[in-house]
Image (cartoon, rainbow, N blue to C red; front, side):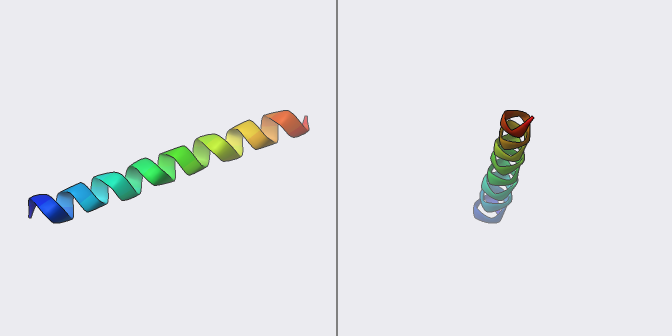
Amino acid sequence: MARSNNKVYLDSKDLLLGLQQLNVDSKNKK
């Protein structure tokens, strides 16, 4: 269970990092 929870945590962390990178890219375009 801890392993699956850890995987979900890492996946959500990667998603957050991806969203932040998109925000940075959109800001740079303006």
